[in-house]
Image 1 (cartoon, one colour):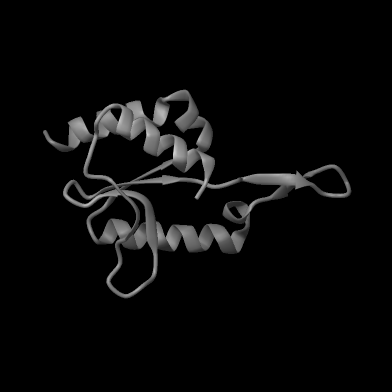
Image 2 (tube, one colour):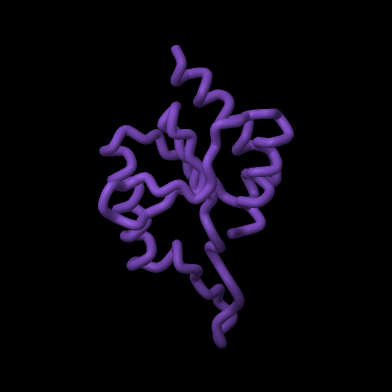
Length: 115
């Protein structure tokens, strides 16, 4: 669990937005999980992990798992399968969570989905 995920869960609770399941296993055969899922609405929120961590010897930033070719391909496969099963997948950064942008956008998405 990441700090971004913890913060997002607190924000959901603060506004009383229930129905969210953390680490929801959405796929019938794969072990994939969605960071946050609202099964009734079929909306998922993925708080992307560390994109950079530390520095290489040459001073350049080390890539996080989500930024490697293999990691990105795995994430994209997971998101594709979720969407094929009918999920709306909203990907956010920890900074978007901290700024409140993720929650605001989610509220807008839910309003649009109900129309």
